Image (cartoon, rainbow, N blue to C red; front, side, top):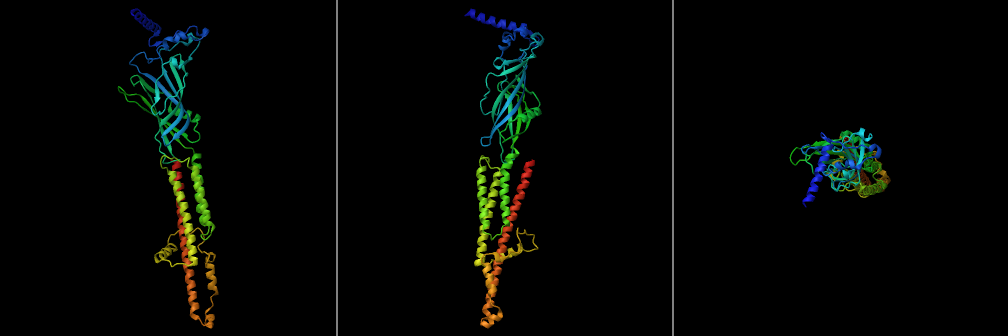
Length: 450
């Protein structure tokens, strides 16, 4: 037992003596003689490989500096319901290992070597927002320079939590954070730095990013957060700004705007036309089919601005259809047996149709030919067939003809009032359409620019 302990102690002493003999100041130069003739000798790196379980620092009080950067190469999925963003990125890390250095002039001009990562100490950099296990493939290589600087790049599929606000969908711009930090080493043992400027990271990522056509990389901003303390960790926070492409906006807004515009133009059809109600019914059915097709593209987690817009468009089209049905019924009732108009409604009609009031004009001619209305033509023909006063006196009924003329004139006047009321209702709804369309255009322009 004592002999085996002595053998173990002797091995450690030999290893320490070997490292001390190899050391020159604060660095440890590897003897690489013969590399130019026989290739790289693995035995020359065994002493450095044996330290892979320990932090590569010549002093316990000196923290190791790890410079990091990343390249965002793909935005795979953004789940608004689960508040997750799935992306693919390459994480680059550079640090200094004083125990792996050599003189290139003595090693055949070799200045860089590729070494398997299983033989090296690797910094435990992770992303705090990561919601899945790190699936970095094994067997990766790291490049080691002759001055001891090691560069390690690894691919990462990152499913990170992201606070998504989709109220302004599809004009929303999301800011997802990627916080890089160490899991074990505090600021006393490891500090983080930037390998390259954040503008270079953004430019490189925008050149190669692949986003499936749904999200576009808008910008990357960096904020360093460091608090010195006993159990505090150094962190570098990146804000990744993404937005939806223009094509995604056009596919949603343009068809809806076209259907609403066609429905507004249908007010130019005569109110007494039988095809107007069927035309509006076809538009309502077509808009429902459009909503069913776009249902998969709309967010389902919360209410968005475009959902409110679609609901208002559908409500306005249904209101227009109901108004057309009501006007058709009103005109039919007025031409068959016109009821007396209430006094308050008659006053309102006179006020709205007065030339002095600033009232919207109907989208058709004001002078409507009442003879085209069903039932009015027959009434006017009866009025034209009524005998004159001299004929009635010869027939012996002077009073009845005059009364009949007055009744027909009153009926025609009532028909005219009810027709004016229907046109006023049509005009008000038409102006409501114009106001809604103008408000929608202004809102889209504001959201597009901001």
